[in-house]
Length: 244
Image (tube, rainbow, N blue to C red):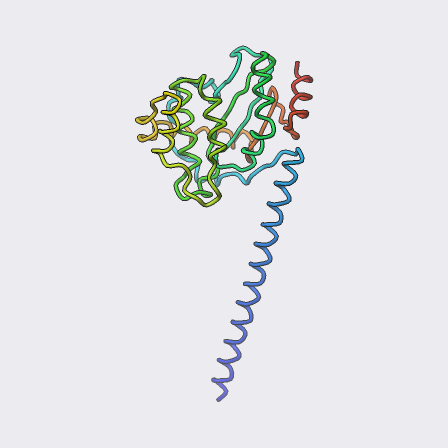
């Protein structure tokens, strides 16, 4: 009888502990969800948003040869190659905050590029593969480099379209075939580059490089190397004016 009571008490204690842990997990998930919502609202109000960086053990691939279209430090430069003021945008095509940045400030950057005020160095990286079921961040970044090599003048349109087509968190994202078809609409043939993952290793090495340089998330926007904490149109124009 004593053993039975003891076992029953033990089972009750274990059940209570499990219930308590479940309650704590639910509270933690709720806090995380509320935190993400608040941060996104702040971003829309004009404050930069940083997503948790990719685990270091995901960035250990062997560095690969650079695409022909990128600068010495791995950027896709849009605008005057010799511009005195350069805006650098580190982005992940899976990143919702990057989509917001493009929506809020993309047109401003395009205008400043057009009037030769600035050049923009775009650095597509992949820290959010875990947020899709198909390593979409890496596949999308690879495809973007394929497009840049095929015709860099088409890259800004591709960049905008990619964020318009950004998949929901946890989804598969655009398939390789869909990425190829997008490029075909621009009269670009990137099929071989996409299907073979030509720049996959390069994306991995560049992701590691920017994280090693201190970037903690996306988007990270800087002007002549100085991070802009408020990358709204007004914030960017102020930082650019200060750098001129």
